[in-house]
Image (cartoon, rainbow, N blue to C red):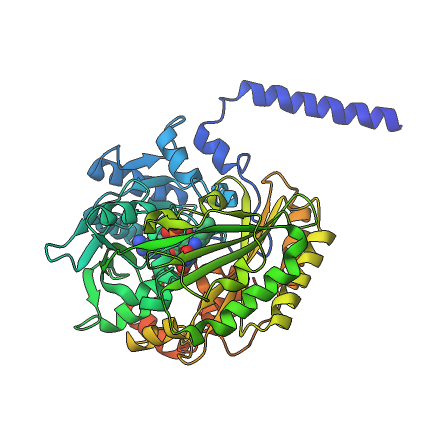
Length: 526
Ligand SMILES: Cc1cc2nc3c(=O)[nH]c(=O)nc-3n(C[C@H](O)[C@H](O)[C@H](O)COP(=O)(O)OP(=O)(O)OC[C@H]3O[C@@H](n4cnc5c(N)ncnc54)[C@H](O)[C@@H]3O)c2cc1C
């Protein structure tokens, strides 16, 4: 009996394979839509990006029409057989999982009118959409879409004003390009600390080496030019009709509309000193103590020109591979005292020297390689030595118990100094509502695994990473730029009610919330 039924199954399969052979081959679109080229959404990495209410035919038509209007160089269709520009655009995300989305078209916008036209078409059809600047946010679906994808990757212009006080920066620039262009003119801006991170960092508040001196990145935005959910193109600055929007954009990421220009206040670039110190993995406890000591003593030095980025990195093995601290000083040489706790540990390698701001922001560029599946988590703490060690110990335990599931891990303690928070308060505050008087650290937990890891193993890994994220201090809002979607960072904000009110004013029918991935204003399961 058994052999007969096996034979029956085999012949049925053979017959259906023959029938398939007789059918026309699948087009690239059918193949993509069948899910054959897509990987399942990783659990606990967020809900992903929504489809709109438009049918797939309606989205196809809107993409075709848009291509007619904006041209084939700008609007790349999924249906075009192996369009390298389409795939390069869609696949160029820091978290490889974003590639699961194959939008019906990718709009390679290079001017504001491309965005205005695309957004009007998206809204008219009720389509979903996604926006990507530098593509570094790992949260699944926050910078990708199954419907229409707006990619700023081809659009970077940096223009210094005639008086040198502001710079207009296009939404597709990366900080390295911004710094090198401005530095040649003696200027710079408060911006991200890795060269190829994009302008999206501004929309989460943004932490910079210049934050202790000048506040968050967003505190140094003079104005945003933005396509509102209504479709209008407006400029929002600290005064005038859209001052509420300017304030909301300091922490709402992609929830208020699509930014097409950032006008940033510039600073004289001045002189810089800095580089990387490397320590032996056996020094990890002393290293973590030094990080806590630096944060505890920072304000007593009364010198806001210093910044650090300390990281502990694991590669494949359950013991740390690298202990690094990036040092940055806005001055010509090493300052007295402030970095001594790190030099006292006798680093095994030291690249510190008189340098440029652009180069100092490049010391961690090796950490921004694309191609892995990636997950960020964060916690906020008033960091004591005990807490710093507990945070490390919990993540070390996670590393050990899950070895083989991840290939790279990193833990970083990012300093939000009291001086930087005071500057933020003086610049009008922000939705996060961080208290001005007391510095804190935002821990960054980075987990990377190979994209081919089976889904059940991903789920196990992400659940374990969640459990290993030390709670931190309840009264400190989360830093959204490093938060996982399931941490629901907006709900931790001190000024959430005010932000909700502004969101309701500009996105009254919640078009953005319902049609694009991103942080959510309501609770619920992730
Ligand atoms: C290696 C590395 C280094 C980092 N260093 C820093 C740092 O020094 N300081 C810091 O604050 N953060 C840092 N981050 C975090 C980073 O700021 C966030 O991941 C940020 O989201 C990245 O911006 P992006 O433009 O590269 O990414 P994207 O993922 O393209 O954008 C982030 C979010 O903003 C939205 N968005 C982007 N552009 C627009 C726009 N024009 N209009 C509307 N919405 C838009 C996207 O839809 C997405 O939801 C780092 C991250 C990595 C991976």
